[in-house]
Each structure stands twice: as structure tokens, then as C-alpha cells.
Image 1: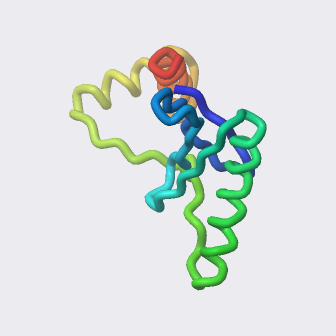
Image 2: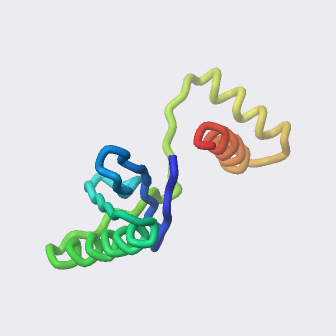
Length: 113
């Protein structure tokens, strides 16, 4: 998946061969915000406009715009897995948060690459 980032918002980018256009959608928020364009330069401008319009529209209606992911992650796992993870972090000389972030980053990088 190709992505673009602007003002902390990330968008997925794709090409529609049938209609011969690029299109994108903001990721990481529940609101649906999309955009499209014929060229890469216009797509980038459309993305920036979509983010700016989203933030402005939220302000006009008195709603806080959703922010993409806060960095807080709550997981529920089997107690045996929790125990192994805590031990792995301790063996690595890291906090559970440090170890977990490294492992999750490596797994996500591998999956998204």
C-alpha cells in the first residue's frame, strides 16, 4: 500500500486503471475522508485540501477532529503469553513497553513492506 502523510494524517493511495485516476482515503480515523486527482502533483494538493477541509469542517460543527492513533495501545492476551512477553522483555533488559514497541514495529514493518 502506498501512503502519504500531512499534518499527522496518513492516507492510503491507489490508482484506478479503469478511470485513469489516483485516489486516496485518510487512515486511522472513523470519519470517511477521500480525495482523487489525475496527476501525482494534483493528488498531493487534493490530499492537503482534504485534511484542511476535514479539520475546518469539524471546527464549524463543533466537533474535535479525530487524531490518528494516540500511541496508547490496550491488548488483552492469554496470561501465559503475558508471562512470556514480560520475561522476554526482562531478558532483553527492557521495559515491557520498550520491548513491545520494538517487536510490534518489526512485525508491522514486515507486514506493511
